[in-house]
Length: 467
Image (cartoon, rainbow, N blue to C red):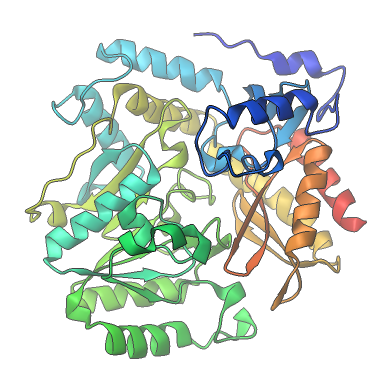
């Protein structure tokens, strides 16, 4: 399978290349047309054309870290499809590996993988668990996307423990199906329409949201109130008894809501509480795993083993959707309930995962993630001096710029201006934030972005915020 790498044709123009000021007329016309045929929360009948999707962009074609729209504009992508394309768009090596794998195993495309055992699923699972610390202690349940993996984790914990309550940590994004949505407290608008359908057995503790901490003015002065006084003395005392709790669920690295890793003490304290009370510890690593944080799995940074952790986004190598809940053996050995996924572990998705791991190993991609991450951090040292930049943060290629006047004064409108100006100049980013602190722009480029493109994108970014 061959993809024409059209990006080489653009060398005479350079990248980014703006032919017509975005949003171009053809993009806008097609977005308006989409409103008549596509139903989504971004393109519904009640929305204005300018509200369409995250950016008013109609994509014509993609290549590695570049996106060309239908108006002929070429953008450098610092978003990676919200981390679904860690290995770049149309990665020829991964697609070639994946096709070879499917041919070797005799199954292409879709197959009812959960109805039958297949050698491909067995070999992919063995290969995958070699990348997990103490992988021999885990098994893999395949699904299609992050919310489905989190539904699996929640159901598994409830079935295993026989308990009915979940403690969720505020700030994380767990998905849009009802179990995952019930656990989410990031922005009130995420769930307000569906509030009557949400589970009543979810209790909320303060997450590892240090930049927005309600207990400490400065995260350097952390006094552990979020664990010692809020979680232990309030949630697990006033609201629900520990013996009623099936699981804790959290993002150890809070992604879209904050782009901030938890403090090691926070994670270790949760592990201790779970061990003392027979509670299942679930880590949502949907966006932060597959090397994005600089390590293959986010919990490797903490040397703490979750009982279940979930992954998705780039887990299928950019070939096809794939997610997983990776679950401790002793839980699966004592699980009375059944859960499945029709397309979980489809051969094309499994081949994408196997191909991606092969590609990562062959190209020492984790080293490259950390190398490029250091380049971004070096630029951040200058950016933090600008009045509008309150903080820069993140690990690996999972980073963000937080625009505030001070801790309690987010500059959301300014952030939107920067994002729109970047778009007009050919740089694609995405917003983030929690509650009223919607002041982030994420920097999550593909691991394969050429270094010169990354530097150009950062130059343009700096030029805008310098003004």
